[in-house]
Length: 201
Length: 53
Image (cartoon, rainbow over all chains, first blue to last red; front, side):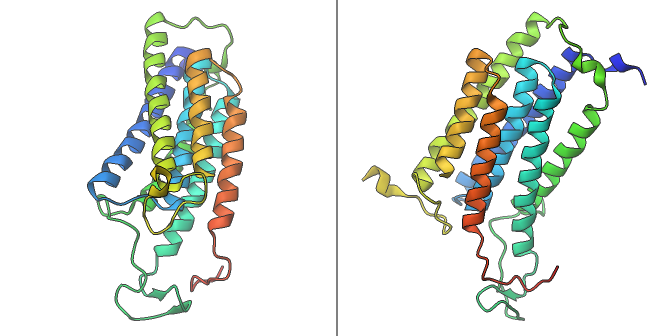
């Protein structure tokens, strides 16, 4: 395989696209949250933390140049995210389970899913799909070592587009901080889906 | 603690954009460790899921 099949500039563009895709998922979660009036639970918030962290790893590749360390950030964050997503999926995978007694039951809606499904799957199941895709994609992209050549020139247009893209990530990460502060304050997040309005008196 | 975790990520994203800061990877690792601490606090170890591993 030719080593220079993926140039540093092409790798930056790929990472920029990945980062924007992850940012779009986070914004989509906001649309879902406010249209269904469903606040994210603790596990949902942790999956968002992992998404922001994956996007930040890609943003480092975009701004500082492709590096195994930055891809490592993406992989470790995706592993964290998939762990949380699988945990939440397993919590709700059996609808005929009484979480209070810890016993199987035939009672209807004894273990309801969290939130509304999107295209047939709940968001935490989409989380498993998303983080597995990130792990696969990062693994494949790392096969091409031509991207790690030091001192490769960066096109001026790419600098501008990259700066704009990472600015969007900064805004989304700041929004997440603000809405999390409104929901959780500085303590633990409520799992009943309510806002901690005490912060505002 | 969740707010601090998101805040840490937001601050590192901002400095990456503004100053091309190279310490963002360390901030992400700290944020993920905070996430693990939050996760461990959220898990009810006394409950059974009706499954076995």
